[in-house]
Image (cartoon, rainbow, N blue to C red; front, side):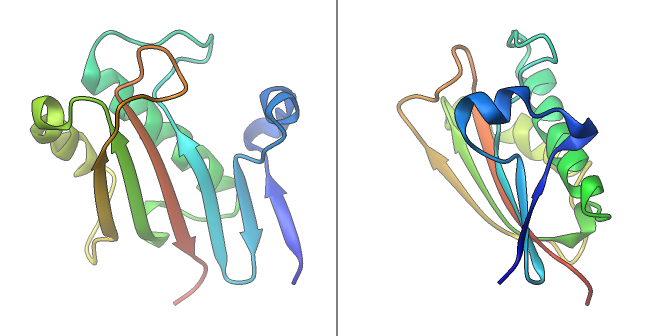
Length: 130
């Protein structure tokens, strides 16, 4: 099966360093790498809601590379530091991105994430077409 790497804006620098693709188009699905809410300069916002929005915005950029939007997401997994503390605010931000029918979603509390200061990492699978 053919696979196509998705690089929003054609920027491959970080992806090449880490040996990963932000997204992969494979068959009728797009698999998006886990995204944190870091700013374009690599800093992590102190405000949790800013982190959540930036993570979703990065996911949106990968989906757009495949000609898709958030309505194509069929499965989402989010990994959280302090899930109980920010669950409600995460859900409030998330509700601005996902639509009915809502994707399947698993939220997991973790002990740590790769990016210093990150509170969440989100990965999604999107379907192409109906």
